[in-house]
Image 1 (cartoon, rainbow, N blue to C red):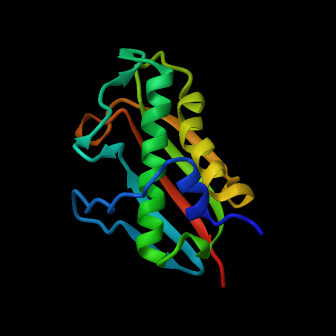
Image 2: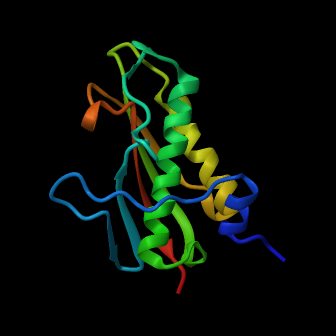
Amino acid sequence: MTETPEERLKALGIELPTPSAPAANYVPTVIAGGMLYVSGQLPMGPSGLAFTGRLGDGVDVATGQEAARLCAINLLAQARAALGSLDRIAQLVKLTGFVAGTPDFTEPHKVINGASDLMVDALGDRGRHARAAVVAAQLPLGASVEVEAIFAIAE
């Protein structure tokens, strides 16, 4: 029997948090055409924003990866809230990762691996996805990383 995403997360020692409310005029998720679109998630932890600062200016790649991993956990929390169960995810179609970085920071792809790796660990082959990873001059609230996702919903 194949493990469910919830079982995989439990084995990783991860308990999904209650999803954060939007910080501005948008909704956290939209379902349209058999797809679930999840708004960008920041690395919010139990005490609030857990990772701030810019890559290439005091924040290293390993710390950025931790931030991206936390963003992925928050994406899954939003997905579960929208769908009722992570079992309804047929496929993670695409992740887009934004990394706050200096103009000369050239490794956003390594940072966003923190989110990509967590998605594969949690969803198995359904977590393999297309992806973009870009550097931004600044992110909301001074966050180091923000990640958004598009999921195909199982019928």
